[in-house]
Length: 167
Image (spheres, rainbow, N blue to C red):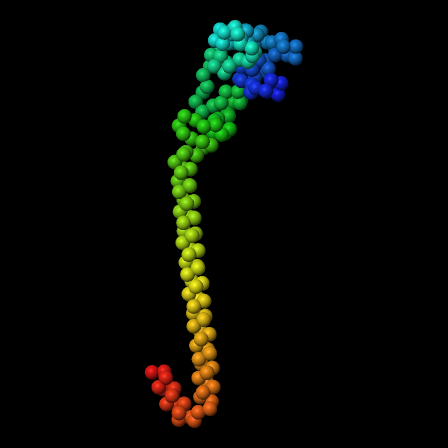
């Protein structure tokens, strides 16, 4: 039906398709009664000017009992709304409440914030390490210069120079 006419079938249409034979005759006498009554009610509600043979969901619901709490009509016994992912009136979606989803989103945002803070700390540590590395290289050059100077000077001068420069 959806492919032929380009419309989504309703539950009434599915009932008719599943309770009729290939020649469009009802498969059981009770099905024939339901189908005829649904078609009459649909004609009364929509008026005689309707061009589609579709039975609306509202008409279908009038002939069959109300849906049991938490169960989905037409999906067989034991199937609940949470099993197929439809939302219910209590604000639950796929077993998770909206509050749980918001809580998880908040947790994700907090984790992203901590990640950014850690990245900033790592950048600061890298910068500090590079500064210390440059300072160490400068000290090594000074030490090499000092050793070269000490190698040319007498021993007494080295001791006095060493004690003077370090204190």
